[in-house]
Image 1: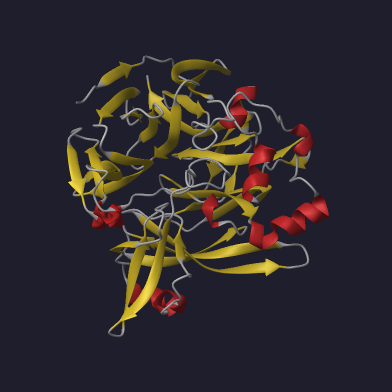
Image 2 (image 1 turned 135 degrees about the vertical axis):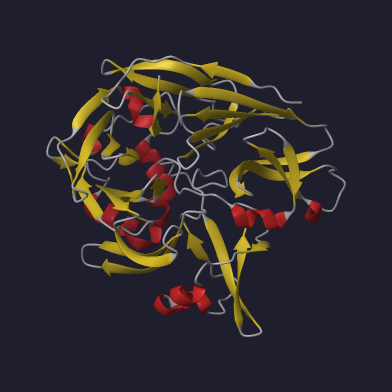
Length: 433
Protein backbone atom coordinates (compact mmCIF):
# COMPACT_ATOMS: atom_id res chain seq x y z
CA UNK A 1 0.00 0.00 0.00
CA UNK A 2 1.32 3.45 -0.93
CA UNK A 3 0.55 6.53 1.07
CA UNK A 4 1.78 9.62 -0.72
CA UNK A 5 1.66 12.92 1.10
CA UNK A 6 2.84 15.98 -0.79
CA UNK A 7 3.70 19.22 0.92
CA UNK A 8 4.23 22.30 -1.24
CA UNK A 9 5.82 25.18 0.58
CA UNK A 10 5.91 28.80 -0.64
CA UNK A 11 8.96 30.61 0.63
CA UNK A 12 10.54 34.04 0.47
CA UNK A 13 13.68 34.71 -1.57
CA UNK A 14 16.93 34.32 0.36
CA UNK A 15 19.55 35.29 -2.22
CA UNK A 16 20.15 36.81 -5.64
CA UNK A 17 19.35 33.52 -7.39
CA UNK A 18 15.77 33.66 -6.18
CA UNK A 19 16.23 30.52 -4.11
CA UNK A 20 15.81 29.84 -0.43
CA UNK A 21 18.44 28.16 1.70
CA UNK A 22 17.16 25.03 3.47
CA UNK A 23 18.97 22.82 5.94
CA UNK A 24 18.37 19.73 8.04
CA UNK A 25 19.47 19.52 11.67
CA UNK A 26 19.69 16.10 13.29
CA UNK A 27 21.39 12.73 13.28
CA UNK A 28 20.62 9.24 12.05
CA UNK A 29 21.49 5.90 13.65
CA UNK A 30 22.81 4.85 16.04
CA UNK A 31 22.33 8.12 17.90
CA UNK A 32 18.71 8.34 16.85
CA UNK A 33 17.53 4.74 16.98
CA UNK A 34 15.84 2.60 19.59
CA UNK A 35 18.04 1.74 22.53
CA UNK A 36 17.04 0.97 26.07
CA UNK A 37 19.63 3.44 27.37
CA UNK A 38 19.31 6.30 24.84
CA UNK A 39 16.34 8.47 23.89
CA UNK A 40 15.32 9.44 20.39
CA UNK A 41 16.17 12.94 19.20
CA UNK A 42 14.32 15.38 16.95
CA UNK A 43 15.16 16.08 13.30
CA UNK A 44 14.05 19.36 11.75
CA UNK A 45 13.94 21.01 8.33
CA UNK A 46 14.74 24.72 8.52
CA UNK A 47 14.97 27.63 6.10
CA UNK A 48 16.93 30.86 6.38
CA UNK A 49 14.74 33.93 6.58
CA UNK A 50 16.04 37.39 7.49
CA UNK A 51 19.28 35.82 8.82
CA UNK A 52 17.31 33.62 11.21
CA UNK A 53 16.35 29.95 11.24
CA UNK A 54 12.68 29.30 10.66
CA UNK A 55 11.30 25.80 11.12
CA UNK A 56 9.60 24.44 8.00
CA UNK A 57 8.84 20.83 8.89
CA UNK A 58 9.18 18.40 11.79
CA UNK A 59 10.90 15.39 10.26
CA UNK A 60 10.88 13.75 13.68
CA UNK A 61 9.73 14.92 17.10
CA UNK A 62 11.97 12.41 18.82
CA UNK A 63 9.28 9.74 18.88
CA UNK A 64 10.42 7.48 16.02
CA UNK A 65 13.59 5.82 14.70
CA UNK A 66 15.35 7.95 12.10
CA UNK A 67 17.73 5.43 10.56
CA UNK A 68 19.33 7.51 7.87
CA UNK A 69 19.46 11.00 6.36
CA UNK A 70 21.05 11.12 2.90
CA UNK A 71 21.32 13.92 0.33
CA UNK A 72 21.70 13.03 -3.35
CA UNK A 73 22.55 16.17 -5.31
CA UNK A 74 22.53 14.37 -8.67
CA UNK A 75 18.80 13.77 -8.25
CA UNK A 76 18.11 16.88 -6.12
CA UNK A 77 16.65 14.76 -3.34
CA UNK A 78 17.10 14.18 0.37
CA UNK A 79 15.89 10.77 1.56
CA UNK A 80 15.11 10.17 5.24
CA UNK A 81 14.28 6.67 6.39
CA UNK A 82 12.02 6.38 9.47
CA UNK A 83 10.42 3.39 11.12
CA UNK A 84 8.47 2.46 14.22
CA UNK A 85 10.47 0.04 16.30
CA UNK A 86 9.20 -3.58 16.17
CA UNK A 87 6.41 -2.55 13.78
CA UNK A 88 6.49 -3.79 10.18
CA UNK A 89 5.95 -0.33 8.76
CA UNK A 90 8.53 1.98 7.21
CA UNK A 91 8.47 5.54 5.94
CA UNK A 92 10.69 7.19 3.35
CA UNK A 93 10.48 10.95 3.51
CA UNK A 94 11.66 12.25 0.11
CA UNK A 95 12.49 15.96 -0.06
CA UNK A 96 12.72 17.17 -3.66
CA UNK A 97 14.63 20.41 -4.22
CA UNK A 98 15.08 20.46 -7.99
CA UNK A 99 12.43 23.17 -8.37
CA UNK A 100 9.83 24.06 -5.77
CA UNK A 101 10.35 22.37 -2.45
CA UNK A 102 8.22 19.23 -2.30
CA UNK A 103 8.02 16.60 0.44
CA UNK A 104 6.63 13.14 -0.34
CA UNK A 105 6.12 10.35 2.17
CA UNK A 106 6.32 6.80 0.83
CA UNK A 107 4.98 4.21 3.26
CA UNK A 108 5.25 0.41 3.13
CA UNK A 109 3.76 -2.22 5.45
CA UNK A 110 4.98 -5.82 5.59
CA UNK A 111 3.50 -9.05 7.03
CA UNK A 112 4.83 -10.26 10.35
CA UNK A 113 6.66 -13.25 8.82
CA UNK A 114 8.87 -11.09 6.56
CA UNK A 115 12.30 -9.62 7.24
CA UNK A 116 13.88 -6.37 6.11
CA UNK A 117 17.09 -4.63 7.13
CA UNK A 118 17.04 -0.99 8.15
CA UNK A 119 20.18 -0.14 6.13
CA UNK A 120 19.11 1.23 2.77
CA UNK A 121 20.89 2.62 -0.30
CA UNK A 122 20.13 4.34 -3.56
CA UNK A 123 20.77 2.66 -6.90
CA UNK A 124 20.48 4.08 -10.40
CA UNK A 125 19.20 1.39 -12.75
CA UNK A 126 17.82 1.82 -16.30
CA UNK A 127 17.65 5.60 -15.90
CA UNK A 128 15.66 5.46 -12.66
CA UNK A 129 16.67 5.96 -9.01
CA UNK A 130 15.53 3.26 -6.57
CA UNK A 131 15.68 2.91 -2.81
CA UNK A 132 16.80 -0.63 -1.98
CA UNK A 133 17.04 -2.63 1.24
CA UNK A 134 17.54 -6.28 2.14
CA UNK A 135 14.36 -8.32 2.22
CA UNK A 136 13.15 -11.87 2.80
CA UNK A 137 9.49 -12.79 2.34
CA UNK A 138 9.68 -15.76 4.70
CA UNK A 139 11.76 -15.88 7.89
CA UNK A 140 11.88 -19.69 7.64
CA UNK A 141 13.85 -19.51 4.40
CA UNK A 142 17.59 -20.06 4.23
CA UNK A 143 19.45 -16.84 5.06
CA UNK A 144 21.13 -16.85 1.64
CA UNK A 145 17.72 -16.39 0.02
CA UNK A 146 17.61 -12.71 0.93
CA UNK A 147 16.95 -10.35 -1.96
CA UNK A 148 16.61 -6.61 -2.38
CA UNK A 149 13.29 -4.82 -2.12
CA UNK A 150 13.32 -1.75 -4.36
CA UNK A 151 11.04 1.29 -4.66
CA UNK A 152 11.24 3.33 -7.84
CA UNK A 153 11.38 7.00 -6.82
CA UNK A 154 9.89 8.19 -10.09
CA UNK A 155 6.88 5.88 -10.22
CA UNK A 156 6.68 4.64 -6.57
CA UNK A 157 6.35 1.10 -7.92
CA UNK A 158 8.04 -1.87 -6.25
CA UNK A 159 10.47 -4.46 -7.61
CA UNK A 160 12.45 -7.38 -6.21
CA UNK A 161 16.11 -7.58 -7.29
CA UNK A 162 18.81 -10.15 -6.67
CA UNK A 163 22.22 -9.31 -5.18
CA UNK A 164 23.70 -8.24 -8.50
CA UNK A 165 21.76 -4.97 -8.29
CA UNK A 166 24.31 -3.57 -5.84
CA UNK A 167 26.68 -2.95 -8.77
CA UNK A 168 24.45 0.03 -9.61
CA UNK A 169 24.97 1.67 -6.21
CA UNK A 170 24.75 5.45 -6.39
CA UNK A 171 26.94 6.87 -3.63
CA UNK A 172 27.78 10.54 -3.28
CA UNK A 173 30.09 9.99 -0.32
CA UNK A 174 29.91 10.98 3.30
CA UNK A 175 26.47 11.97 4.59
CA UNK A 176 27.33 14.56 7.18
CA UNK A 177 30.03 14.44 9.85
CA UNK A 178 28.48 11.43 11.51
CA UNK A 179 31.71 10.12 13.09
CA UNK A 180 29.95 7.15 14.62
CA UNK A 181 31.51 3.72 14.27
CA UNK A 182 28.51 1.49 13.66
CA UNK A 183 26.76 -0.65 11.06
CA UNK A 184 24.36 2.27 10.74
CA UNK A 185 26.98 4.84 9.71
CA UNK A 186 25.84 7.60 7.39
CA UNK A 187 28.82 7.06 5.09
CA UNK A 188 28.10 5.32 1.82
CA UNK A 189 31.20 3.52 0.60
CA UNK A 190 31.76 0.56 -1.66
CA UNK A 191 34.30 -2.10 -0.69
CA UNK A 192 35.69 -4.39 -3.39
CA UNK A 193 37.96 -7.42 -3.34
CA UNK A 194 40.25 -8.26 -6.24
CA UNK A 195 40.72 -11.81 -7.47
CA UNK A 196 42.47 -13.10 -10.56
CA UNK A 197 40.52 -15.65 -12.59
CA UNK A 198 42.23 -17.15 -15.66
CA UNK A 199 44.74 -14.33 -15.57
CA UNK A 200 42.09 -11.59 -15.48
CA UNK A 201 41.26 -9.41 -12.47
CA UNK A 202 37.71 -9.73 -11.15
CA UNK A 203 36.49 -7.07 -8.73
CA UNK A 204 33.85 -8.37 -6.32
CA UNK A 205 31.62 -6.10 -4.28
CA UNK A 206 31.49 -6.56 -0.53
CA UNK A 207 27.97 -5.25 0.04
CA UNK A 208 28.07 -2.21 2.32
CA UNK A 209 27.28 -3.09 5.94
CA UNK A 210 26.22 -6.63 5.08
CA UNK A 211 27.05 -8.97 7.94
CA UNK A 212 28.92 -12.12 6.95
CA UNK A 213 31.27 -10.42 4.48
CA UNK A 214 29.97 -12.19 1.41
CA UNK A 215 30.67 -10.98 -2.12
CA UNK A 216 27.45 -10.01 -3.86
CA UNK A 217 28.25 -8.80 -7.38
CA UNK A 218 31.01 -8.06 -9.86
CA UNK A 219 31.97 -4.41 -10.13
CA UNK A 220 33.12 -3.48 -13.62
CA UNK A 221 35.76 -0.78 -13.25
CA UNK A 222 35.75 1.40 -16.39
CA UNK A 223 38.97 1.76 -18.43
CA UNK A 224 40.71 -0.69 -16.12
CA UNK A 225 43.84 -0.91 -18.27
CA UNK A 226 44.36 2.85 -18.02
CA UNK A 227 43.83 2.79 -14.27
CA UNK A 228 46.17 -0.18 -13.80
CA UNK A 229 49.09 1.66 -15.40
CA UNK A 230 48.86 4.25 -12.64
CA UNK A 231 47.69 2.04 -9.84
CA UNK A 232 48.92 -1.52 -10.19
CA UNK A 233 47.45 -2.44 -6.78
CA UNK A 234 44.02 -2.66 -8.37
CA UNK A 235 45.12 -5.75 -10.32
CA UNK A 236 46.73 -7.71 -7.52
CA UNK A 237 45.27 -10.95 -6.26
CA UNK A 238 44.75 -9.67 -2.73
CA UNK A 239 44.22 -11.63 0.43
CA UNK A 240 40.57 -12.02 1.37
CA UNK A 241 41.09 -9.64 4.28
CA UNK A 242 42.28 -6.81 2.01
CA UNK A 243 39.79 -4.45 0.44
CA UNK A 244 39.78 -1.48 -1.86
CA UNK A 245 37.51 1.32 -0.65
CA UNK A 246 35.64 3.50 -3.13
CA UNK A 247 34.39 6.47 -1.07
CA UNK A 248 32.35 7.86 -4.02
CA UNK A 249 30.96 5.69 -6.79
CA UNK A 250 28.11 6.57 -9.14
CA UNK A 251 27.33 6.92 -12.82
CA UNK A 252 29.20 10.26 -12.99
CA UNK A 253 32.42 9.73 -11.03
CA UNK A 254 34.34 7.00 -9.21
CA UNK A 255 37.02 7.77 -6.62
CA UNK A 256 39.81 5.30 -5.81
CA UNK A 257 42.34 6.27 -3.09
CA UNK A 258 45.74 5.05 -4.25
CA UNK A 259 48.42 6.18 -1.80
CA UNK A 260 49.24 8.52 1.06
CA UNK A 261 52.08 10.89 1.85
CA UNK A 262 52.61 11.20 5.61
CA UNK A 263 54.94 13.48 7.56
CA UNK A 264 55.49 11.36 10.67
CA UNK A 265 56.99 14.26 12.62
CA UNK A 266 53.92 16.47 12.31
CA UNK A 267 51.46 13.71 11.42
CA UNK A 268 50.17 15.74 8.53
CA UNK A 269 49.67 14.28 5.11
CA UNK A 270 47.78 13.98 1.86
CA UNK A 271 45.81 11.29 0.05
CA UNK A 272 46.23 10.62 -3.66
CA UNK A 273 43.21 9.53 -5.66
CA UNK A 274 42.33 8.41 -9.13
CA UNK A 275 38.99 9.86 -10.25
CA UNK A 276 37.05 8.46 -13.17
CA UNK A 277 35.00 11.12 -14.93
CA UNK A 278 32.30 9.56 -17.07
CA UNK A 279 31.66 12.72 -19.06
CA UNK A 280 35.26 12.59 -20.35
CA UNK A 281 35.70 8.80 -20.11
CA UNK A 282 39.07 9.06 -18.40
CA UNK A 283 40.88 8.70 -15.08
CA UNK A 284 42.49 11.83 -13.58
CA UNK A 285 44.87 12.12 -10.63
CA UNK A 286 44.09 14.32 -7.64
CA UNK A 287 45.62 15.06 -4.25
CA UNK A 288 43.53 15.95 -1.20
CA UNK A 289 44.55 17.09 2.27
CA UNK A 290 44.31 14.55 5.10
CA UNK A 291 44.12 10.79 5.39
CA UNK A 292 40.48 9.97 6.06
CA UNK A 293 38.85 8.59 2.91
CA UNK A 294 35.34 8.85 4.31
CA UNK A 295 35.49 12.68 4.41
CA UNK A 296 34.73 13.04 0.67
CA UNK A 297 31.39 14.22 -0.69
CA UNK A 298 30.14 14.65 -4.27
CA UNK A 299 28.26 17.94 -4.69
CA UNK A 300 27.20 18.77 -8.25
CA UNK A 301 30.40 19.66 -10.22
CA UNK A 302 32.63 19.30 -7.18
CA UNK A 303 34.17 16.92 -4.70
CA UNK A 304 34.23 18.48 -1.25
CA UNK A 305 35.84 17.43 2.01
CA UNK A 306 37.68 18.33 5.18
CA UNK A 307 41.21 17.46 6.28
CA UNK A 308 41.09 14.73 8.91
CA UNK A 309 43.13 11.78 10.19
CA UNK A 310 41.91 8.34 11.19
CA UNK A 311 42.71 6.14 14.17
CA UNK A 312 45.56 4.39 12.33
CA UNK A 313 46.94 7.50 10.63
CA UNK A 314 47.51 10.23 13.17
CA UNK A 315 44.55 10.28 15.57
CA UNK A 316 46.30 8.94 18.67
CA UNK A 317 49.50 10.87 18.01
CA UNK A 318 47.60 14.13 17.56
CA UNK A 319 45.47 13.58 20.67
CA UNK A 320 48.63 12.91 22.67
CA UNK A 321 50.50 15.95 21.33
CA UNK A 322 47.76 18.55 20.94
CA UNK A 323 44.74 17.31 22.85
CA UNK A 324 41.27 17.96 21.41
CA UNK A 325 41.09 19.18 17.80
CA UNK A 326 41.44 22.90 17.20
CA UNK A 327 38.78 25.29 18.46
CA UNK A 328 37.51 23.16 21.32
CA UNK A 329 36.87 26.09 23.66
CA UNK A 330 34.48 27.63 21.14
CA UNK A 331 32.40 24.49 20.56
CA UNK A 332 29.00 23.83 22.06
CA UNK A 333 29.13 20.40 23.67
CA UNK A 334 25.44 20.08 24.29
CA UNK A 335 22.82 19.57 21.62
CA UNK A 336 19.16 18.58 21.41
CA UNK A 337 20.00 16.47 18.35
CA UNK A 338 22.04 13.64 19.84
CA UNK A 339 25.73 13.01 20.40
CA UNK A 340 27.88 16.19 20.33
CA UNK A 341 30.89 16.62 18.04
CA UNK A 342 33.69 15.91 20.54
CA UNK A 343 32.07 12.70 21.71
CA UNK A 344 31.57 11.51 18.12
CA UNK A 345 35.21 12.00 17.14
CA UNK A 346 36.30 10.06 20.22
CA UNK A 347 33.99 7.19 19.33
CA UNK A 348 35.24 6.94 15.76
CA UNK A 349 38.86 8.02 16.37
CA UNK A 350 38.86 10.80 13.77
CA UNK A 351 40.86 14.01 14.10
CA UNK A 352 39.64 16.93 11.91
CA UNK A 353 42.04 19.84 11.38
CA UNK A 354 39.66 22.68 10.52
CA UNK A 355 40.73 22.90 6.86
CA UNK A 356 38.17 22.55 4.07
CA UNK A 357 38.67 21.83 0.38
CA UNK A 358 36.80 21.54 -2.90
CA UNK A 359 37.88 20.00 -6.22
CA UNK A 360 36.28 20.83 -9.56
CA UNK A 361 35.54 17.68 -11.55
CA UNK A 362 35.77 19.49 -14.89
CA UNK A 363 38.78 21.77 -14.43
CA UNK A 364 40.77 19.73 -11.91
CA UNK A 365 41.26 22.89 -9.79
CA UNK A 366 41.76 22.23 -6.08
CA UNK A 367 40.88 24.96 -3.55
CA UNK A 368 41.71 24.70 0.16
CA UNK A 369 41.00 27.16 2.97
CA UNK A 370 41.04 27.31 6.77
CA UNK A 371 37.79 27.45 8.71
CA UNK A 372 38.87 30.24 11.03
CA UNK A 373 36.98 32.03 13.76
CA UNK A 374 38.54 34.13 16.52
CA UNK A 375 41.88 33.63 14.79
CA UNK A 376 41.75 29.86 15.38
CA UNK A 377 40.97 26.97 13.04
CA UNK A 378 37.67 25.31 13.93
CA UNK A 379 37.65 21.52 13.60
CA UNK A 380 33.85 21.30 13.66
CA UNK A 381 33.43 22.59 10.11
CA UNK A 382 32.30 21.13 6.78
CA UNK A 383 31.34 22.03 3.22
CA UNK A 384 27.58 21.59 2.86
CA UNK A 385 26.65 22.65 -0.66
CA UNK A 386 28.00 24.19 -3.86
CA UNK A 387 25.90 25.67 -6.62
CA UNK A 388 27.21 27.79 -9.45
CA UNK A 389 30.03 29.93 -8.08
CA UNK A 390 28.88 29.84 -4.46
CA UNK A 391 29.98 27.48 -1.71
CA UNK A 392 28.02 27.04 1.53
CA UNK A 393 29.80 25.74 4.61
CA UNK A 394 29.34 25.41 8.34
CA UNK A 395 31.71 26.48 11.10
CA UNK A 396 30.44 25.45 14.53
CA UNK A 397 27.02 27.16 14.88
CA UNK A 398 27.25 29.41 11.80
CA UNK A 399 26.53 28.98 8.08
CA UNK A 400 28.68 30.96 5.65
CA UNK A 401 28.50 31.57 1.92
CA UNK A 402 31.54 32.47 -0.19
CA UNK A 403 32.12 33.17 -3.86
CA UNK A 404 34.47 30.93 -5.80
CA UNK A 405 36.71 33.47 -7.54
CA UNK A 406 37.93 32.54 -11.03
CA UNK A 407 37.78 28.87 -10.00
CA UNK A 408 40.98 29.36 -7.98
CA UNK A 409 40.16 30.64 -4.51
CA UNK A 410 37.43 31.37 -2.00
CA UNK A 411 36.29 34.94 -1.53
CA UNK A 412 35.30 36.79 1.62
CA UNK A 413 32.76 34.81 3.67
CA UNK A 414 29.24 36.11 4.19
CA UNK A 415 27.50 35.03 7.38
CA UNK A 416 24.04 33.73 6.48
CA UNK A 417 22.80 32.65 9.89
CA UNK A 418 23.97 31.79 13.41
CA UNK A 419 22.02 29.54 15.75
CA UNK A 420 22.97 26.88 18.30
CA UNK A 421 20.90 24.32 16.41
CA UNK A 422 23.25 24.68 13.44
CA UNK A 423 25.94 22.59 15.17
CA UNK A 424 24.01 19.54 13.95
CA UNK A 425 23.24 20.79 10.43
CA UNK A 426 24.95 18.40 7.97
CA UNK A 427 22.64 18.76 4.94
CA UNK A 428 21.93 22.01 3.07
CA UNK A 429 20.31 22.70 -0.29
CA UNK A 430 18.59 25.46 -2.29
CA UNK A 431 15.08 25.49 -3.74
CA UNK A 432 12.80 27.96 -5.46
CA UNK A 433 9.80 29.38 -3.65
